[in-house]
Image (cartoon, rainbow, N blue to C red; front, side, top):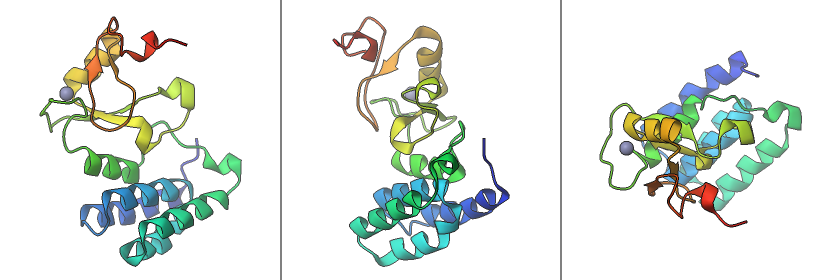
Length: 165
Ligand SMILES: [Zn+2]
């Protein structure tokens, strides 16, 4: 697991900008995902994101990510501060539709750490402790997709494990 001191130092800048509302939710996600891989890009991307159109931010983010070797793109299991900020921006409440909980939200890997070995904002859910427990101990699952959606029990046809191959 790579956790450079530099990465730690750059994250608060992104979090600050996200919380200050200087970025749209989509731009926040793009910047967070690029800075996760390339901490050096934080200043440049944040400055760019303030004024540039979304497509430009995306392009520069991808370019920054492409500039590092594959070995350096290893991402830790725990979401970074920037990813958390992007998630909280997207999901102020539990991601399960109809669940109003805003407190004690936990960030959960959707595909599962064991499968992907990466943490991505679009593959994570904010779950309250109740729904996190249903998933962890009773095999409930989010229906396919990302963002707020339904959570179903293991015998529900929409449960990912019941998907026909
Ligand atoms: Zn919930």
